[in-house]
Length: 498
Image 1: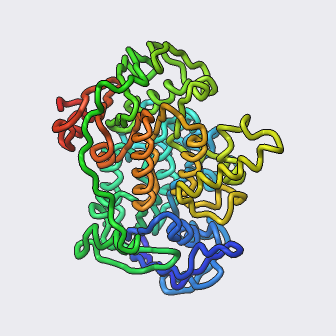
Image 2: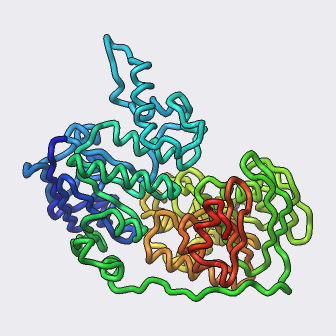
């Protein structure tokens, strides 16, 4: 592989009066993993998109192998050897795995696509993660039929298919389970040894210290420092990111008083994935769902919200219920914050206010009530500390953390009694996470029952009164008090006794 040297010097990007990047600097060389760190809205995505030709800077310059370069499109960046895996997937649901991976650079002979060669090349790429995905992930499978982790693998392989000299991994591990992450990191080490340069964006500090050689830190649109990972520590990097703010330290929470009312009781719940799940959740309790990705956590939440069919008994507030549609669940004061805010939680081109109103539209549909909607939306935005230009700005103008606040805020307008959370902090920074944790405390103190799936073990250990660990669609362990430890959580996730 031909060596590469990439420098971004004093890059600036503005959108009208909004400064997305004020002075972005980055240097990465062949055979190096450079972590790109910063709070949501700090400029990481903007800097990455400048490097990949998605957007053009208003100032500064990009140098490739010492030569000033400007990319008019992602295709031009790929020709220069730069490819990216983005946090928001770019796959087309109605195309196959092979068609998505080779889109725009299909093998062609005589003006026709060489389908057999394309499928064979796709299988060769899939074999890089052999044994770590379901049987449905095949070259001819439609993207719409795949699980979130399988789609993330396809996104990674799509970027790799361009044979890049520099690859940007933007939250590429967010939807992967621990085995898939381990394999990706093995591949990163191989790519490094072959001379590839890697820019790695992650909000998981453990991953940064595990895989990166250096870290570049952005804050408020400016590069504020570069550190050698072996000579730094988590505290130093976090202080650079959030100007000295501390990571939320939390004490282990006790089990909720059994005298409190049972808000939710589930008995022998079954779906295509779940194999007989039973649980109880009380008012004011935060019950965690642990385990590796794809073990039934999302199915459980979706079934309780009426989004997928299920069998078994669901008792809500003492009444047996069967929800055939999310509307019925909403009427029963149930809310779901989905795992994919882009496709399941937001209308990206609509305004922040319209998105906040989505779950309560009937309440605000008359012209006279619209001023009430604006007042309520402003109050929620203030409570959640949303960083935005106005309620009329489109949601796609927000950083990931602020967009997630909109997803949560639309449900807070309904004051739900049962809140279902599907990995709600995925891809948001430590500052936004701390605000979210405080919100959960307030909801719990107000008596809201919360069922919470997280792919972050630290969140389960630090936030939850109890944790149910799912393995192969079943509850393999219930962890509470002194049993709620990282060792027991990992053991139960792998199907071992906790």
